Picture 1 (spheres, rainbow, N blue to C red):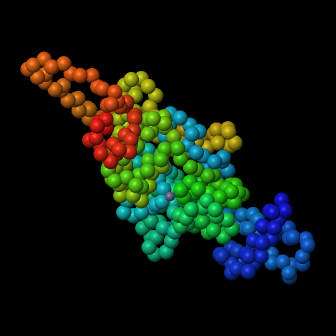
Picture 2: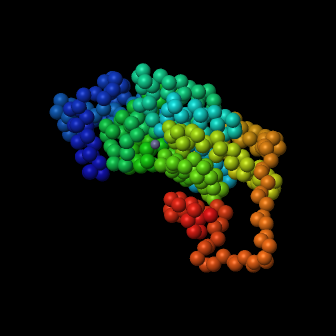
Length: 359
Ligand SMILES: [Zn+2]
């Protein structure tokens, strides 16, 4: 406790010496309890937002459907999948991602790096943000400049959380209830800040590592394999990456094909859903809004029709013709272990897929 008081006083001194960070800081309208020991002249008053969110910020984070939830890590639900796309908008790549999501009727959440929205160079990004919102996608904040917030406090949080959320709320004309820290890293002070603002922290459970992928077909296969293996969850991808923009349509097609196969086998499909399904109040699942439930039901209802409209799968290749002499094939030796469906190639296979044991 003593440490906390000292920290607040030190921070208040620093804050008082520095120029105001934003217009909001110049016109505080919330009164706070002053430290009793010193007269006001000796003790620079803490800016209200150092202690509690500025009133305008409370307004822009007041999202009763998405905000104020427990930290989401993607393990809250199985059997459904929520797609998330980080770091955009990028006028070069994000539109293709939106096109693919709309084609396959997939809900998704975009976590926005808000400096992309600023100024003249942000004009196209702002248009894309508007398209995301009118398309019924969710948007959350992903910091102002995408720095690692693992050790951040004070002014860094003012900028990367408060100012960033204010920027996004203004451009989106709605309160912002979701925040994803860059790299999934957030200091304890950052978590306190989100809690005070009533903003839900959202991580992921299926990390596709698309940002470092080079091979489109490998990435395509990997994403759906991971979704199957984990039986759903929250998928992390990056709409700013050209490879993701190129491959996302095929990924969603593979997911649909997988779901069609499951229907055929009378198994439950892994239904793409909005991130609402992962929200918890403490450990209690939050009620899903009617419109969101209806959208999920509509996807399920439309799936048989979509499956019927799909082109038939190519026939499997015929078995190789038997050689004239009846040579008995040897069973695989222990040095060539059989790879199971759903296994991931090891690192050696990724580098050299033709190596022994990688097929
Ligand atoms: Zn990011």
